[in-house]
Amino acid sequence: MGDFQAVYCWIDEIPLSRPKKNISRDFSDAVLFSEVLHHFYPSKVDLHNYISTNSVSKKEYNWNTLNRKVLRKVVGYEIPPNEVKDLVACKKGAIEKALQFLKTKIESKKKAEGKKTSRSKKVSADSKRSRPVRGIPTSVQGQQPAFGDARSLLDEKDSIIEDLRETVAILQTKIQKLEQLLRLKDKKIEQLQAPTGGSRR
Image 1 (tube, rainbow, N blue to C red):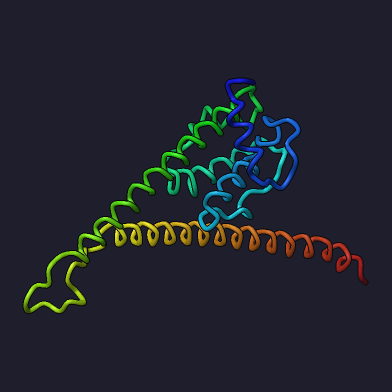
Image 2 (image 1 turned 30 degrees about the vertical axis):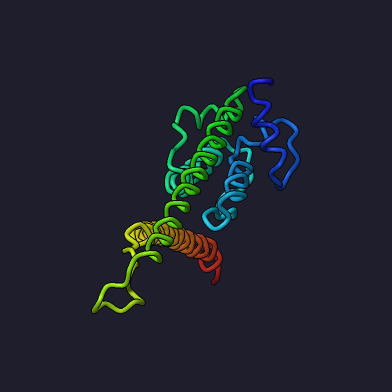
């Protein structure tokens, strides 16, 4: 327990929807893990995508969705398939290792963003100190092209497009299933009505 004490303390500071009794079992369906991510990236994590379940296949689906939609795009890594199976199976120490790695990634990301903000402020200050150039309006002097911001916007746009495509595909699948159910229902109605019609004189 001593090796993961920092992880336990870290998790205790994060508000979760249900109390932690057995951390391996409580986190096995990825719901609480998604809540931890939502705590740090509220605009990037849709909690309704992750439903509490005891089904192994649905637990794996939750983890795979979390990998695809959040961990890969937002945090910059994925939990390997063999580790997902360990998490679903409530293997001892599996969730602690996953949370420990997530904690490290989040803290590293915060430090990197802090340095980036400091550099941006320095560039802005240097721009303000630069001399005016004759023939160029002072309103545009010292401005730096926001290539990073543009790239970030493009990545976000691609991410939204991919999510919309996935949503459309899911809806199309649901429509097809509904159509199949309607056809089956019609057939059953016909079968039930056939004997009744045949017994009439």
